[in-house]
Amino acid sequence: MMDKLGIHINASTGSAEHFNLCCDCRSFLSKCKILRLALANNLYRGTLPNQFADLTWVEEKVCALYCITVHVTCLFQSSDPAQPRVFHGNTCAHEMNTVSTVTVLPRTPSDVNAFLSIVFIGPEKFDPKRMGMLFHVCRQKIWSFLMWLHHHNALYAQIPLDSSIVSLYPDDGPIPGLADCVIEDHELNANFVFEEETAGFGKHLAGLFTSNAAEGEQMVMIEKMGVSDPESDKLTGQSFVASAIRNLLPKDTAESRPDLVIHNSG
Image 1 (tube, rainbow, N blue to C red):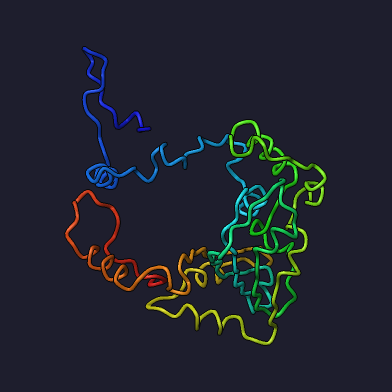
Image 2 (cartoon, rainbow, N blue to C red):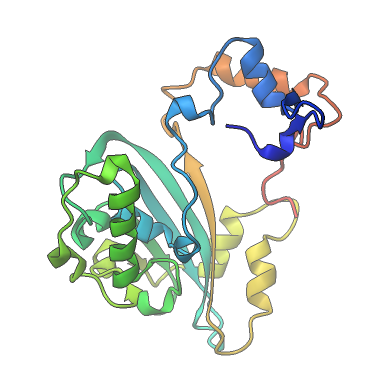
């Protein structure tokens, strides 16, 4: 399926005259390979209604048929007594060795919590209610989303939906049982550890934002990262070198991707 803006129609005949292709699509087609986002890959599931545009990642996890990643969040609380509601840190998604497949939806809170782990460093005790939208779920939104999937997605058509499980979630709040997923450390200096772990050419963006937070303002700034091969046993060193060399080759001037990205360089 192509975007209609990339199809040029002949005004006299009404038929397609030529197509515009991006560099990635052209590369796949020239090698007689299926495009990554082609309909033949069964990855396209249509467009979600606007009412589901603000689904949180935890709500998506609750409704997922398959789960293949665990999420580890390292969260730092501001050491400034005037900013007890300011937090920053990062979340890493690690691939699991097994795939969790459901037979009934939604997933229970204990099931979802099994994929979550939080390392909290700060002077106060971890409070899920202060996390803003980070681990937020809404009972009605979860049920509405599942009902929509049941009627519009073939993969969900035969999956039983249990309303008693939905009742385990709050009307509007953090996922139940989140506190059991937390490892707390109140002895370490959160600012010192954060500065040490994010040391670079410039100051980390989180430091710039949190230093300007108003007194009493709630702020949760999380950097999200994905880890596909944490043990370096799936991707060979040759693959890494080949990828690095490929990035050094001259590219089309229309290519918008940078040659090099320096993380946290300011």
